[in-house]
Amino acid sequence: MLNLPSHAGYAMGWVLSLLGLASIVSYLLQYRHPERDYTELKKRISSWWWMIGILFICLAINTTTALILFAFISFLALKEFFSIVPLRLHDRRVVFLAYLAIPLQYYWVGIGWYGMFIIFIPVYVFLLLPMRMVLIGETKGFIQSAGIIHWASMLTVYCISHVAYLLILPVKNPQAGGVGLVIFILFMTELNDISQYIAGKLFGKHKIIPKVSPNKTWEGFIGGLLTISLLSTLVAPWLTPLNAWQGLGAGVLISCAGFIGDVVISSVKRDLAIKDSGTLIPGHGGILDRLDSLMYTAPLFFHYCYYLAY
Image 1 (tube, rainbow, N blue to C red):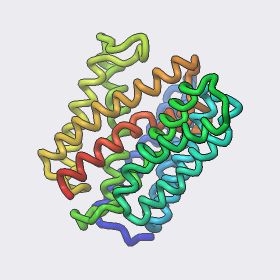
Image 2 (cartoon, rainbow, N blue to C red):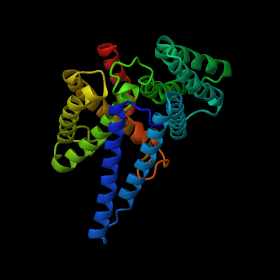
Image 3 (cartoon, rainbow, N blue to C red):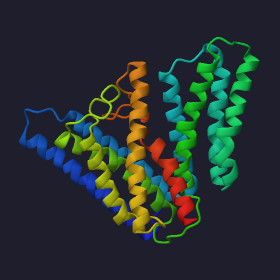
Image 4 (cartoon, rainbow, N blue to C red):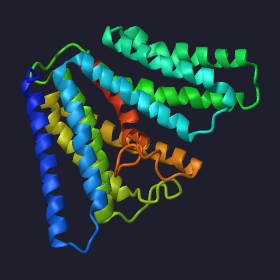
């Protein structure tokens, strides 16, 4: 379990140290301001301990274990998506086929079959699902259901599986390996969300799309963009095959894509008149609330890295 590339191991140590610091700060805040309620903050930090702990353990064991973890995450995300959107009773068999696509998609990842990995859901699943719906014989609501099921599969299975495929790519940075790539995209995406939130709270005045996400401001977006661009420039040569200039491009891409993913899922929740996509993760809401940015950053970063470094 300790057979990790050195830079990936150091990155894990830094992440755990920051998480430990966050825990200490939360307890100090509660001690200095006992009249305030920090329950939500403590729940968030506790959930982060569990999520990061499970992720790091699976990454440290071996690639197969990590692939199983990401497949399970896709399953939970797809299940949650189907739980919040309106689907026809007749579509249960079609939904089963969407779930069946998960082990197949991650099997293509596991054997490194890039060609099938890249087209399986956008082409074969896309064609198969409506064909199965036709055989059911119910035409009312056909277009809506076909669009929902395939879009959900694309976001929660296809997009997330790009994170897993980073582990399969040929190693171009031996000190970081595939684990370094995974840590880079996951934590740059999460840090982008955090930095945009903090910058928005401190300096936010000009709203971007108030009807979709009233708390999103230009100041928050630009603050996150600058922060992640700088961090990515510094960290990319350490954890990825990218050089500093390519890392800068990756930072810009991750920040912009993360923002778009966030507001797209916010639009879904507003359309459905719900605040959170679920209650699976205490302090965070549902798993879609945690994966919204990653569903956009993962495939874009994968292809950016793939075509520049491989």
